[in-house]
Image 1 (cartoon, helix red, strand yellow):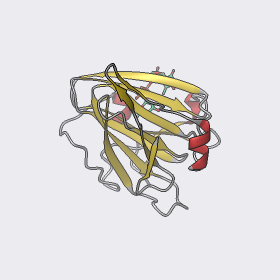
Image 2 (cartoon, protein in one colour; image 1 turned 180 degrees about the horizontal axis):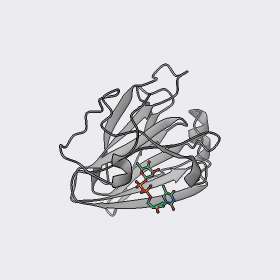
Image 3 (cartoon, helix red, strand yellow; image 1 turned 90 degrees about the horizontal axis):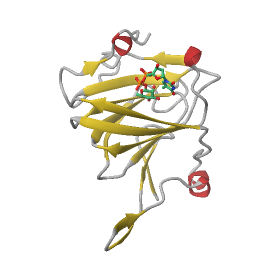
Length: 175
Ligand SMILES: Cc1cn([C@H]2C[C@H](O)[C@@H](COP(=O)(O)OP(=O)(O)O[C@H]3O[C@@H](C)C(=O)[C@@H](O)[C@H]3O)O2)c(=O)[nH]c1=O
């Protein structure tokens, strides 16, 4: 696997190193040892999928509050998304910065998201399936959100007029 640091402290793009042959390819996507060598936690306790229907669907920006913060590894198993992360850790050198990258079932790239960093995405294809692995259990009482369009951050979403849930549209502006 190839680990590339992003401008967000502790967040990495994780790419596969495929073994290709006449049948197709085989590639490792998670390895406890390799992740640990990069200071990353691969001890995932939950895995979930979402499927979005319609190009331009936007989910986010989500995180879990302390003490239920989680690391998250996000990859796409169908279609393509533009994945975005936003650093909400006041002590971080990249506090208030965001980063976006295309993840797809073709590029097989994943994004490793550290604790305290909010996550969201917008679909680039008519259907997109996203696979999540998390290092802490889902805790509804700890769920938090930041408005996807908060001018304090100015995330440059790729598609205008996104399809957003009522819950995501009601997230507060960052204070
Ligand atoms: C996130 C989550 C939701 N749910 C339930 C709650 C709700 O009834 C239903 C749909 O949840 P949501 O509307 O929160 O789904 P969604 O808006 O897709 O939430 C996801 O958004 C992206 C951006 C993330 O980063 C994920 O971690 C997660 O927060 O699934 C679980 O049971 N377990 C989970 O881990």
